[in-house]
Image 1 (cartoon, one colour):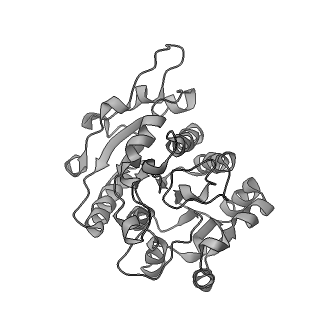
Image 2: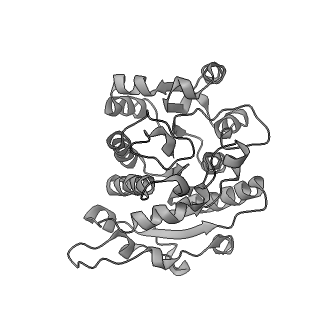
Image 3: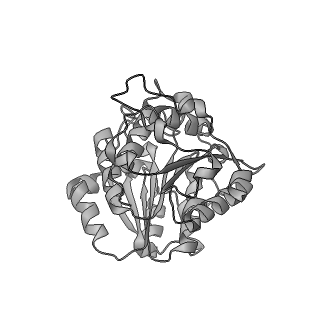
Length: 311
């Protein structure tokens, strides 16, 4: 099967085991053998690349994030909600010699997994992977909501593509309907007014960090989600949206941003709102992290999403 030819199998040492029979770990229910794929509800995969970050002159290291996120996730306590779901870890995609080749492979794999009716969780990697991740979903579901939870807009007008261009590519190539696209958590010091103007001209919705808090996180998402009919949701979590006190291991960190508790709340909302779609976590950089703090926060977000996800 193409999926297994273009991915490397999971290192099962990352699954671990609990030493307490009364507190099993998430890793104990994760399936990774090809024969278990078809019965899975949710598929986790990694994209260990940071070529897009390098092109954008950022701090590289995100290629190591999938391993560290898994290391933290699979040690977390298993609950009944997660145990009721069949979760398959596809391993990491085989990256290409160029970023464009990697994106083409990732898009092909995600489209196949989505076509098999599964929700996909993608562990980046740089935020450039939003382009193939979201494009794959768009090719299958036209009524799609898109959320970029990020300090940056990532609509830079640059060539070649990089970690700051993904959403401009998606808009300009017609994969995203701007009226169904939400930029959430941005801060003025991290974005040019020219790019906010671009988004507003296109009809996209922009809520800065301050605007999100003024509105109220739960109220904001509730009002957005009830305003549309949709077949699928794309959730892009760029971990640099979190303040560096809670997430020091990112490619571009700042002292301001969402608090850990706030982004966990968004992960809960995402779980409840997503029957089908893609959830990606990007820009985690273990090389500058402190005690895998950011990897652990990302793992908690995935645990929260899985705990609340509808089947």
